[in-house]
Amino acid sequence: MSGPGGPGPDERLAVVDGHIERRVGPLCFVLAPDGQMHSFDNEAAVAVWDGLALAGTQGTTPRALALRLTERFEVGEAEALEDVRGVLASLLSHCVVRRVG
View 1: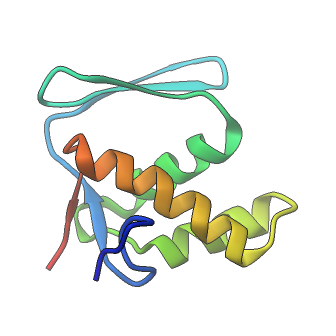
View 2: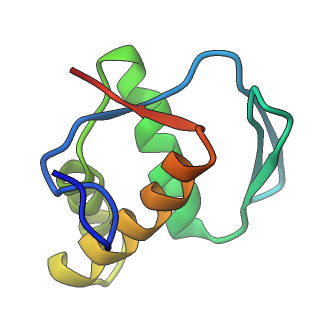
View 3: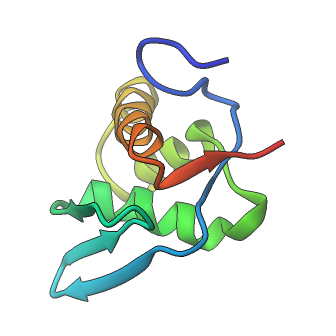
């Protein structure tokens, strides 16, 4: 269940069809189907996006994405989960990701 901090830790989300992704150096830009541009301008945000993209249509959970961050960066699980849920809340509100199931 979603809360004020974004989707629940085990809520499955996937990238919507019809987006366009471009990379410029370490940055990632995503054009959503509604024409809004989203930029991922730090390594953690790009890692979240990459995790979503790799999950494909079956999607992934905020908890799995947070685990990905803890393995890659020096960050605790609680802080990583809070950050991931914030990114996903924004992406949900802009229809870049969707709930699965």
